[in-house]
Picture 1: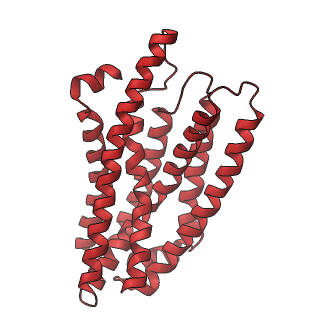
Picture 2: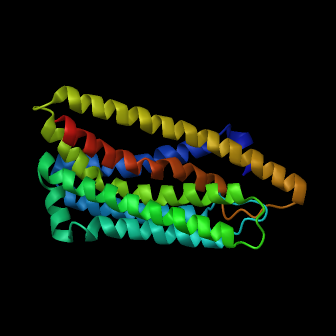
Picture 3: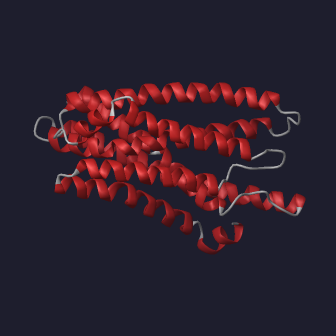
Length: 256
């Protein structure tokens, strides 16, 4: 992984991030233009599942004395539960209705509110599990790093489910342009700025990961990373960006 970053100057993770964002965003825009948002919503869910298992397969959150299997299992479970709740809480029929609601703020906000509430609950559970797991370890070396790894990976997989709401956001933006164009532009611009910030932060995280990997190899002669860890780290900011979708719907609800 260090060689990859050195050869490309960090461009490979950036390309992976841009491709992932294109796969998540372009289908929803195309589906909105064609009026088939329900199909796009199902595709978003499939892509989120792929992203979750890609992160688990290319796990970047490891280090000396930090077992990876528990964190990977927790991340996969949390991600799938978060995604399932997006469908279960409003009901499959209700979700389909929201996807095809034509941008009515009154119908999109309840879905975003449910997502925010379920996300808050899952992150609270994650915090408890994270603390208990670290305190139960016999070898408490790297406790802070272990807590950070569990927290960031859990946050990423939970936030990833927010991408399923993108068809609703596309519909809401289109439906609100006439009523409050300035509010829509403001929310979209702020959302894009935050998205770019996360992508740039992800590039720095990738570089830090490469440095830590090199130090570990120098000290121990090996690394316990799983798969191409640079790809897993590249996915983290993209998955975190899912929260921006729900937050944008929330902002439009109060501004429009």
